[in-house]
Amino acid sequence: MRIREFTDSDWPRVWEIVQEVVRAAKTFTYDPELTADEAYRTWVEAPPGLTVVAVDDDDRVVGTAKMGTNRPGPGSHVATASFMVAADSRGRGVGTALCRFAVDWATRRGYAGMQFNAVAATNTTAVDLYRRHGFQVVGTVPGAFAHPNRGRVGLHVMYREF
Image (cartoon, rainbow, N blue to C red; front, side, top):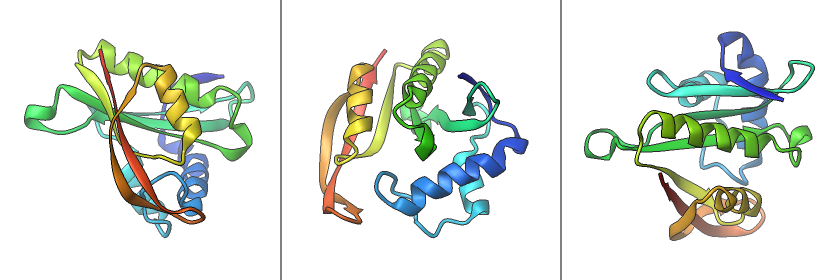
């Protein structure tokens, strides 16, 4: 697997992944009825941010990430990132590789840290992955995420200082 910069020709496969994740409504706070055009505007970062894809040995897109500045102005020294992995590629290290890539990207650009603003507390796979990469839960907003099976669950804010 390798990670490379997103190109517009990747969008059909990235949209499949985004649509699959968003429609499930179990991990992201995006509207499950998000259209492809809305998703493109939300997911594809303009510079200085970056959107990437993870591709397998057959050059098939198996995951994607976006990264950039978390907040403008006085908060611009902190980065953020989001990750999505195709269902048939989960558990194979794609998320780990994308997380490493984003942390390295932010570190090279001189950010002071990285913050994830809304990690569903029930998304234990992601929470565990982020913890393995040095992130901590710095706060949880109780009941802020409406999980389709578990009802209202907490949303974690996670942070790692560089």
